[in-house]
Image (cartoon, rainbow, N blue to C red; front, side, top):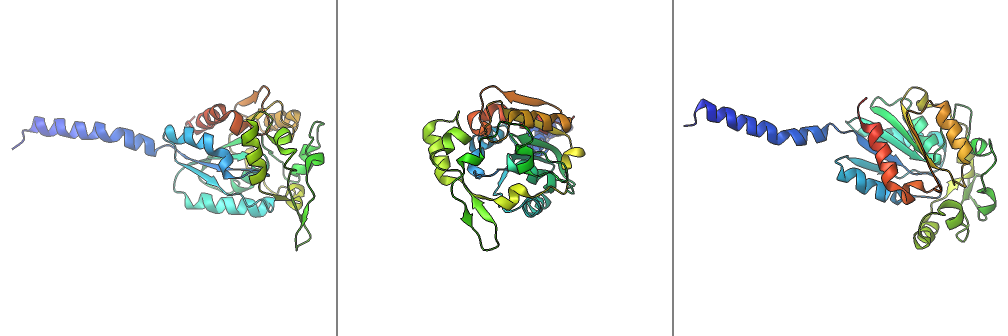
Length: 259
């Protein structure tokens, strides 16, 4: 029969053994939302770093059909999670997370990765044109007409590497060009109805060589949102999460740390 001291020692050993597991369970889920002309695999290198550090991760397949409908879809994903969430959006995905998080109860932070953070009444297209610098329009391929009168937009495959991913290895950028997912012209022109960044703490990271969204616009949106911390990576393209995954993952983890 064990003595009381032995029971106490065993209990302490058990308690110590479960602390790491319990601590890990306290980490929020990181939900990643890709933008136009991309897919969920654009987050792969960020995901591997976050998971290595013990964060549960969900990379959502953004429909790219419309700001409100895409936001509603992401909101449903959030509703299924029984944990705190750090919601991350790239490019057009920023517009989507601003809508999705507006009524969510479990989102503790937003991270905008080369992303739009629109006010209600603003669209991605309008924000892109707010300051000079975007060269996206001339690189778009012939649009595909859809039955509802909208059009699917792609970047011309030959122009994709320089436009979207100039600091990504060329072989990788060419694969991205082939696998890109289209966005509707209506989605880029749709005005946001909600802006979660007005009430949820936000962080921003972008490249100062972005050709899709002018860096001046990205900094302006970060300032307007009272960004807790903004990182501008010198020479980085619009695909900053691919070319600089370590810095993107690091900022996400900062946003995930309780304040």
